[in-house]
Length: 427
Length: 115
Image 1 (cartoon, rainbow over the protein chains, first blue to last red):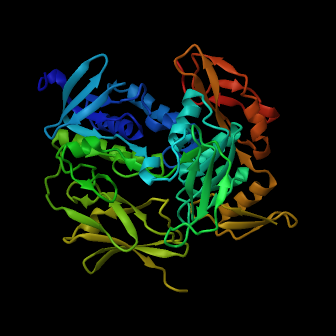
Image 2 (cartoon, chains in turn orange, green):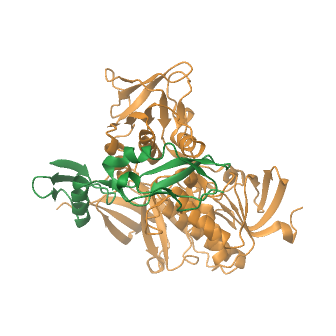
């Protein structure tokens, strides 16, 4: 079945969300002509389809779009090409020799081969099970994304009196959405002393509707037999232990969890691709190639992004990388520079840079571990050489940082590069 | 005096706006903060997004947005104008769903195509 020209594609992309769509369109523009995207949902667009709020595309399109509009633009771009999209199809396996096993109700079980493969599966939400909240197991506890789908796509109201655990962006967006639809959102409760959400969402989703945000608090008990009837919230000390006597009881029928996202990488791991424990995604090079030659990864499957604009950018990198791989136009200079996280840096993507394969410049994404309200510096060092030192007025874990390294800067570098945060000079 | 957090960039400056002194803004570290602070206290504006019911399609809801910002105080009123609308498929991207929402001059338009 496999191996024939008919079953062999220049590129097979797993996932038709923003990362996969951008990757496929870029690969097409770079000259690959037999491209297939496989999507498990009934339509392309990924999570954007249910993100009906605006604020997408400020970087990429220089205008504010809603999620469906942003997705729609890339779906239209893909339609104008000869890219094939298989919907309602589940990929079961990607093998090291680049065969993709898939199943759907029309073609049954199928194996297709890719000269290159791009993994763009996105991420999924952490659930109640992942964070272990004590209490009974009543109905009415949803992840914020599930509630978003119920409300925006299926047209069901998930509840009337809502408590939100976690201050991630989806939770904040849902606080506003549910309020506008007539629910009472009682509070948003955050374990950490700061919110992981974007400032604009704190202001426009909580402050606009006088929804209190309790920092350094968590839900210590969920009450209810068949349906949620209430929850207990407590303040946490510096060791994240509940402080006795701080119990607050909320009379709610619904609890939304916005407690983090995990890259979805079952296929990646099964293929034997090397993973990064910090990002929970594949370890990638500057063009988003993984440890398996010809297999690339991009978007939230590599690391969780805050903004779809950067997901698009990463998809395009992977698309261009796959095109160069298939066309054999890659530079074969084998020098590899490892990137390492130094002081207060949680991770870097990419984890390795091949100067021979990068363009004039390559972007490096990273997240800091703590909130920096005072000006500080990003120091990029290799051995004792400081390659660059960049000032930032403000940094926070909820805001991904992006720096650029030029070919020139990497010319004489032989050792690994460390990115660390250094305190600003006292005035 | 009104206190607010600037949303122009991730820095989130804490602004103070004095309504009694020509909406003078303090606490901002750039010009954009001043503009935002003044507007936000004089007449805060928001884009409103929601969904409307759809008939004749496998989709049951169509996402919509106001095609320009409306006063923040009119958000709930604007939401009411969508309550009893059922829009027959097909729906075009940008199709007007509600004209002149609450006399603001803004329209609710469809933000996706529905077949």
